[in-house]
Structure formats: structure tokens, C-alpha cells
Image (cartoon, rainbow, N blue to C red; front, side, top):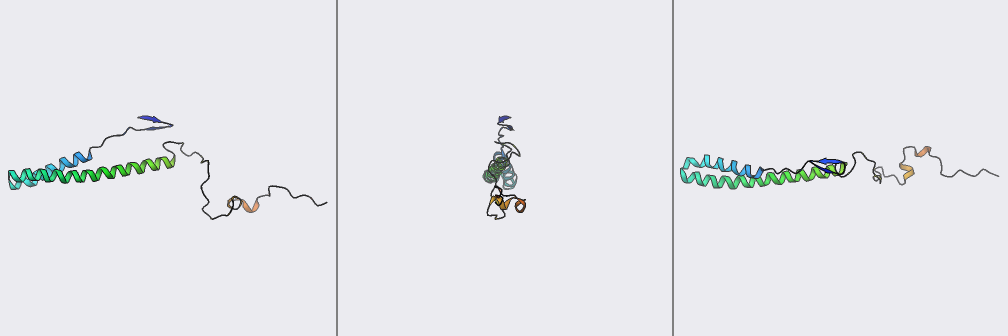
Length: 121
């Protein structure tokens, strides 16, 4: 595990999905092709290995997309590269369409003016 700021991040693990899929395809192709004899066995192994490689590449691409999405979520939530639950320095934009900060405050109608009115003379 490596230390990044305040978070401990696990090291990258290399998954061998593509290789495993190619081997599985090769074995399945050999089993099916063996019904046609030795030539079918070899042809089945080659075709199965190619099909397994294509499937493995697709699986690895999906894993990479999921990993990147997880990293984006971790960054957004402050799990990596920040403090979890820390107050943001800039408040998010108003969702209610309020025209000013005063109107978006929950106690807006009850707010007192910034300056006191002058008493009459």
C-alpha cells in the first residue's frame, strides 16, 4: 500500500483477464475441434484462442472504465486527494433559482438589515 496525502491507496494489481480468456477459448476450441480429428483440434485451438483474446480485451476495457469511474468518485467525495466531509471553500450554486444570497438563506424573511435605521429627529 502506498500513502497519498491522508489516504492509504492500494497498489495497482495487474489482472490477467485477457490471458485467462484466451486460454479458456483455446481449451474450449480444442475440445470442440477434436471431434473433427487432429486438424480440427488445431483449428479449434487457434479459433478459440482468437475469440478468447477478443473477449478478454473487452473485459479488460470494462475493468479499466470501472476503475477510472471509481477514481473520479473517490476524488469527488474526497476519499483520495482530500479530506472526507471537509467543508468546500466555495459553496455550490443555488438550486432554487434564488436571486441573491439573502433570499437563499433559510431565515431570509427574518433577517435584520445590515445597518440600523437612524432614529427620527
